[in-house]
Image (cartoon, rainbow, N blue to C red; front, side, top):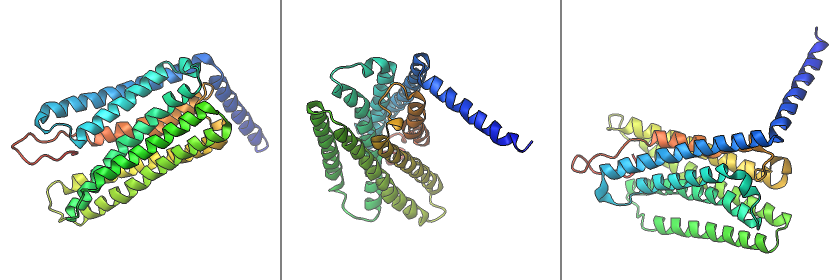
Length: 287
């Protein structure tokens, strides 16, 4: 029986490889997988919108708080992705080609802004708790976003003018660097906030819940952006890992599930609690 095992293993691997190739090369399965992604993105966008409406109904007098902006950006990112995946085959045929890059990459930039906003919020809490001025944090957040978007727009324009492979690689590496930057932001400020909360008295009201919230969200978001960084780095140099083509639907499915859909769903669930009504207690923007 032992000599049969290598043969059986090779046969199983060959069958799996054939299945992978059959799905990737099937227009029917390509459309099915992209439409599944569109539905999931649409659902998460709908959940983010409902949460935004609930918060607005609960505390309309506070205007656009960090919590509301976070959910609004989540809604925009997911709806944009849903529309793109709904018409993925049409997007692939758009001319000029640079428009394909814009449609596929822009939601990733918006995703970066959405979760960088969460890092900003935690940084503000951390420094306020230590009685350190936070006046420079928001301007820094705006400047960083402006620099990232400006560089990406310049790369798009250069690609439009001269669409050569080295520029495409540079664009993907830049995206990987941005993802690494956000991952480090979560470790730095999520980790600091977590350690600070650990030092609070055990009997502090809400300490355990907030500790778990910060710990879970930091872990999820750090993992999400590190995986995105690694994948974009591989994607830049290996055409077999290219995400911007129709014949890699399985890779697209697992990539977007791991780096956007699952993290968004988990974070929305963890941050689902509504703020208290005015007059009951002081309003906490994200809680």
